[in-house]
Image 1 (cartoon, rainbow, N blue to C red):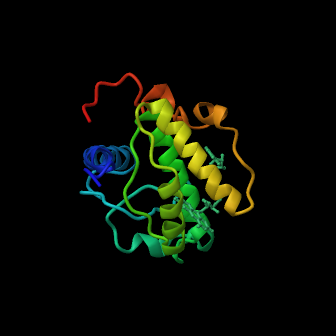
Image 2 (tube, rainbow, N blue to C red; image 1 turned 120 degrees about the horizontal axis):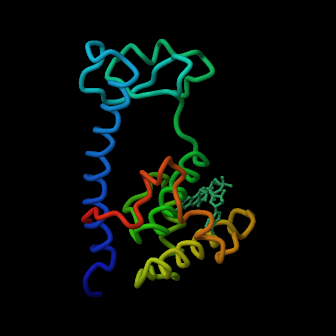
Length: 178
Ligand SMILES: Cc1cc2nc3c(=O)[nH]c(=O)nc-3n(C[C@H](O)[C@H](O)[C@H](O)COP(=O)(O)OP(=O)(O)OC[C@H]3O[C@@H](n4cnc5c(N)ncnc54)[C@H](O)[C@@H]3O)c2cc1C
């Protein structure tokens, strides 16, 4: 075998991760300073607040204890939660940036997916090709789980845009250098 075909994707993803991390840190900082006095929150990292507003991140180790019971979700992530979130991530990336992630933390799923990838090598010559390929492999997983097959011509409508105000999170047309 020659060079690992995933390498360019992984390197790009690495850059993207760093970029997202930086922007997320900045974003969390801005959210906190607009919602709270700057004297109460410094260097916010991650946890949740129990006010009526949507949860925001802080670095307070006790803030989780303040959550109402219904908002606490401290149990392990289920296979379904993980899958749903990962597909969302993958399809959004594929539709917008043609990048695929690297590892999958569910052994059974990863083993299964490895088999699927073996018979369906990644096609990432263009964003369109990658989106369609991902739709196809997702459908392969869907079929094996007895789920409905998704119409791949609808992939862009489903995943091509993020919902956010004034297109501030839409990567299309930005000058970000990945
Ligand atoms: C790589 C990978 C491998 C997995 N392997 C397994 C496994 O072996 N065993 C197991 O039990 N679970 C596995 N899962 C989890 C499983 O695929 C589902 O994510 C989980 O069961 C939740 O399913 P869901 O019905 O919410 O929809 P999901 O399959 O999570 O899909 C989320 C959304 O994506 C859209 N969608 C569905 N199909 C497509 C498609 N083909 N193209 C584009 N968009 C689509 C739909 O709008 C859907 O609501 C795997 C997940 C991943 C990411």
